[in-house]
Every structure is written in C-alpha cells, then in structure tokens.
Length: 309
Image (cartoon, rainbow, N blue to C red):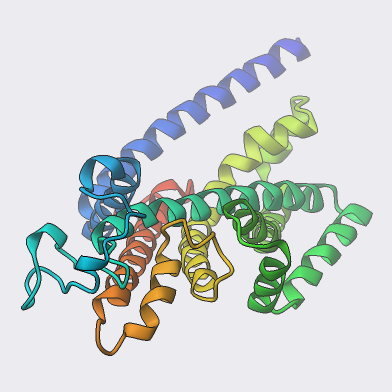
C-alpha cells in the first residue's frame, strides 16, 4: 500500500510539472506579445545571431582582404563614399560592414560559451554548497568569496596577458572568473527551497538527492538565474571588446569588434567611422540582450503568474 501510494504521488507530481511547464510556455508567449520591449529585444538579438550564422551570405567581401587603393573610404552617404562599401573602409581598405558582421561571431561565441561554463560550474558548486551544507558549504563559499574579493578587470587582463591571444583562452578566462556570482545566487536559492513543502514532499516519497537537485530544484533556478545570464553574456561581450582594444583578445588576423576599435582609435578624429560603427554594434547587442533578459525573467520564473499589461 505504501509503495502504491508513493508511486501515485510521484506520478501526480510529474503530471503537475508537465502541466506547469505548458502553462509557463503559454505565459511566456502571451508576455512576449504584450511586452513590446521584450519583443524588440528578441528581434534585435536574433538579427545578431542571423548575421553571425550567415555572415558569408550577407557580406560581399573577405573580412581580411586588404585594398590600399580604397583605404579610409567614408560611408556611402558621405561625400567621397560609395555604396559598394556602405559603412566605408578602414585604414587597410577592408570593408567595415563585412568586418562588423564577422566580428559578431567572436562576440557571440565568447558570450555564449563563457556564460555556459560559468553557469554550469557555478550551479554545480552552488547546488552542492546549498543542499549539503557543512564543510562542503564552507569550502566552496570560501573559494567563491576569494574570487569575488579579487579585482575582476585586473585579474582578467593579467591572466589574458599571461596566456596569450586566443579565442579559447578568452572563453576560459571569462567562464572561470564569472562562476562565483552564479554559485552564490544558486546557493541562496537552494537554501530557500531546501525547507519548502515541495522538497519535503519529494523526500517523503523516496526521491534521492540527485533527483531532488536536478528534477525539482534546478528547474526553479531558471527564473532567478536567467537575468544574470543575459546580463553576464552582455558584459562578456563588452569585456572581450575591451581586451581586444588592449590587444589581449583574439589574434589581430581574426575580425572582432575589439580589434576594430583598437585599429580605429588613432583615426577617431579624422576617420571616425572606423571605430564608431563597431562601437555601435557592441551597444546594439548589449541593449538587445538586456531587453531580452527582462522579458525572460518574467517569462521563465515559475513564481511569475501575471502577464504584463
């Protein structure tokens, strides 16, 4: 009788979870339709993703090909410009529009994989620390507090200078240095949920620790973490551009927004478009991700029940 009752309880919980997921999907769709800023953010972000994926199709030139005869050509709408180079050319005659499109690949790669590493490691550490407590909690949070106590930009610049210019190095640097914030937030949420009724119910029907952590607690972390994920991804794009500006990101042969800013800074007063348009691309992507993050926070948070008016 006890086993049958426990099995029925687990089945009921799974059905409730499925229904809850469907409701959250419907809720997200209604919220997106009503939240115009979220819809705009999604469209802007998808446009950046589209540009990164289909860069060879939507760009007419090789981003590395130099043509000194067409160097420093202004944008098409300015005197001396040409519509064959809509955003002009840089000091080496490379098409600015093409390099911006290809540069989105570097920025999105760094942001996505950097956040993926930071979120994965941070969530694992936070789950262990929050649910187990004791010495594990003290050890993990001591490590997290140590990372948070270090000056972030100084650490990133120092490590990047030591490891050298590489896309993989930049991703690993951001992924490891950013895990602390995800670990702390995850731990706080786990401590709150550990004593809640639905966790006690799962324990009472015989659910193991791994099932509780990954089937009951982890889905409820999506809402609290999603805004941080989008914010940190946006921040990593800014930081990568900063490292590129300092000559510490990807090699100069790789088109990136940071490298474009670095090459255009000496011409800022006489050929401003070389640096301005890559800067606008960074701002555009950051704005898109922040608008999208605000919508995702409300759409994916299981505690959210109201649609914005």
